[in-house]
Length: 438
Image (cartoon, rainbow, N blue to C red; front, side, top):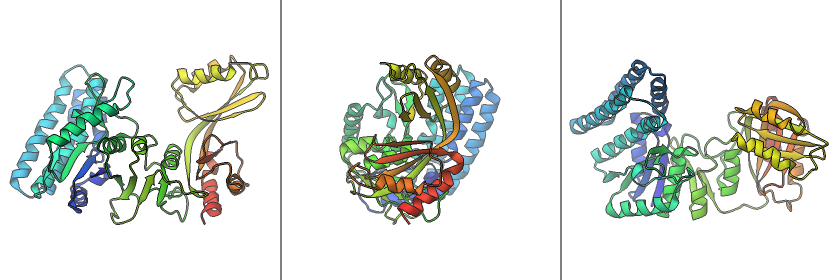
């Protein structure tokens, strides 16, 4: 069995839904399908929640009415029989009345998560009903019945495997199994979400639980490219990536995939394939445990990076100094991407600058602090084991005309990271492409 995940744009219109239905049934083999909410729906549901937080039920009801009208049009375009049109309109009426029920009571984050989950509930119900109308033996499974996180907000893999296996046994013989991405229950049974990775994470967890043949992530891009096609000329799709390489690229800016979502598949040894709904016969990108040796695969970049430098000739060499500095960042839930040390200085990069002022205030206890905003991390990914002589020199040579603030090499066998100014990003990416790939 294959697991196929489709994002919001892939199910963003009745026409797109019909294309997805064709894709999930074309082989005739049993398929497990994970769907996101139709594009734009989650934003509307968040807007409804925002109005309710502000105690403005009139504003919330206006958004609800507009969304209901939009879906009513979708139903008329998607379904061809009066039976299924009536069935779906009755379902939508119940859904939107459910959303309206929140305008009368106290509103908290618990209610917000229930509201935001309805986007996936609607898209999966529409898809399941459409497939059934077409004569396909399809069944809708609620993710809330098997997808759960533990007390640390991490997926409870054993629970997911046990519950899903039992549900699949109860529903043998279907051609298409459909469920919601992103949504889950937490350890206390409340409606919640998977946050990092969203629907991709759901697909990976389901694939691992079912020991699937392959997990397919369908988007509107032909796989992961060897550079940013929005910035660089003549990029190409990378046909194969190691799980570690894919994680590095995703973490450092390749938006097609979230860095955490491939972890369940990696541990289960199940390949993940990135496919394009606009070109379904294209090969896409396969991600597996195979490492192509002595080869640089791709380049990615992450903007909005801030450098924080602590200079202290008195403290740096003393035991516990690094621990004290890192504990400050930890106390404000701020992750560090790159680190460089010298005898008197420590430079770190962060992406989340929400608590920057507080962090700087505390760091001043240990030395002189300077902050450099508007920086960019450029990451070169591939088989970059230190024994591959010359690879780091090749990347450095590509950036010979660009000021480099920091370099990270050796922390991983799969990447070299360079910190540069945001204003130099385009030139750096193009130069790396010219030297490494073209």
